[in-house]
Amino acid sequence: MNRIKTTFETLKKKGEKALIGFVTAGDPDIDTSLKLIKNMCSSGLDILELGIPFSDPSADGPVIQRSSARALENGVHTAIVLEMAANIRKTTHIPIILFSYYNPIFAYGAKKFYNDSLKAGVDGVLIVDLPLEESREMTSKWEMTSKWVENDLSLIRLIAPTTPLSRMKKISNSASGFLYLVSKTGVTGSSGFDASNIGKQVNELRSVTNLPISVGFGISTAKDVKVISKFSDGIVIGSAFETLIESGLENKNLPIIMGKKVKEYKDATKL
Image (cartoon, rainbow, N blue to C red; front, side, top):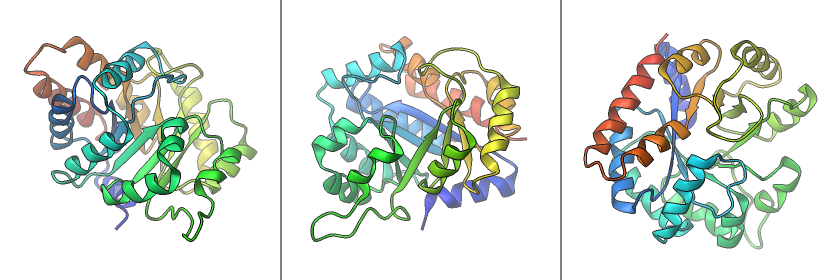
């Protein structure tokens, strides 16, 4: 069963868009992180984007950079993230996407990462700094094994706001699960976006793919979610969730606060 495909199809029938929530695994600590994530999943999150902490997150703004630093200080690494994913899978049926830079996967080993991700119940992976042309070393045939099967573990591709139509088509043809359209140039957590321009980019992208299109970067309020929901299939929120975590590091009610925020965002996806 392809949980990502099923999720988007089910939501479309209900007149809803997918709420995709990012958090860094192990932030602020493993136990608290699991409590936060499980509460988010039970509060209406449609797809979980679980970040593998990395020392040099070049595409991320200060908030997510600090979340990675906190997780790394707690000794969180790829194997622990996979253990967390397996733990989360026991309590939820929503798709789990691993968000990572390529270095942690390269160090872990592509074959081992693929197999262990499937064992943990992971549905897809998004590698922010691995261009199409360079990803073949990860997805090509391994010795004595078959290649990366995207029907089992979807490879989510990023589309930049500056990507021309011809390259959109090329990237889309190599993607599975859904496409992640970056709303603007810059890093995660930067504020503001041009809704009309994003709408045009979504329409362009739809002309070359049948995959669901999700939009992320700069989306932080329920109003933002409602605006983007008019033309996208999914909305990705990350820095806003991590800001809540960072502002509530000593708050025992943080899981409840995160759950309420998920419900607020989710309500805005219902057209």
